[in-house]
Image 1 (cartoon, helix red, strand yellow):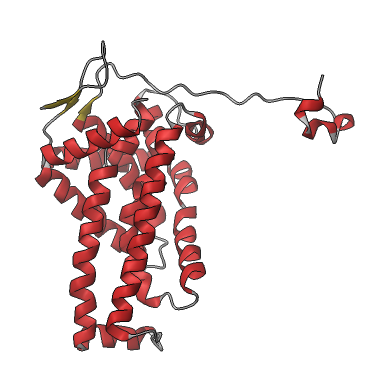
Image 2 (image 1 turned 180 degrees about the vertical axis):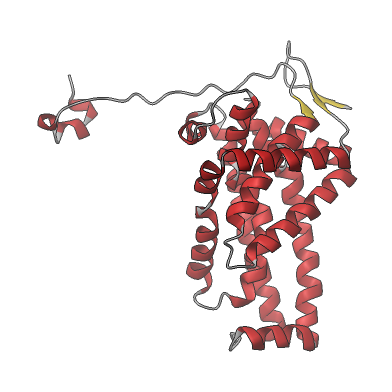
Length: 291
């Protein structure tokens, strides 16, 4: 085990040793969570495949065909951000509560939200850089022209030296990006949902967990990448199932890997709901005018 100190008078965070059996348990529990609350889970993550396609369309116009694989594999980079609500749903169910999708969004008002946003921004940057690098690799191989069709693109990819250059170099570079994203986010995001420890401690804990269990988390990364690619094949629609299962499973993997000790739990600041009548309009839009 490895310990991380989080402050005076607080028990250290313990990083446990985990193996393949733990991955199996985490996946089975993740699937069980999804089966128990599929409507919630699909609702929370269905928008992310759409966002990915829209971002690619805005960034690169209609020539997104060469970026389909980078986008699909890139979901491994932003997956932990997309799964924030799923971690909360799994936490609710683990505590014996009735999972509530509305309460899952309470994380926006959590005392951990600043740290979550900081790490999430880092992941968005990583994802954007990965797409830009992938696009650059394609341009280096085939120039600025767009493939005439999917069949032509696949043919050029597997029968030309430029195509094999993209396959080899692209996958190697993508593996490097994925390794960084996995090390940074596999533990930090679920930990910030569970504990209010700050971005630095969450990042440090995630890095220490991966360094303490390199083989296990390496295999976990391969499992995640394989499932995301499979889920992305039918126009990203399979991600509506793959993402929630992996999100729930990541929560359970965090719970099996980390003993947070006495680290404080996040404080959720409820929104003050003000009531009024139609006669108050438009004054009710101006809270400083209320008496």
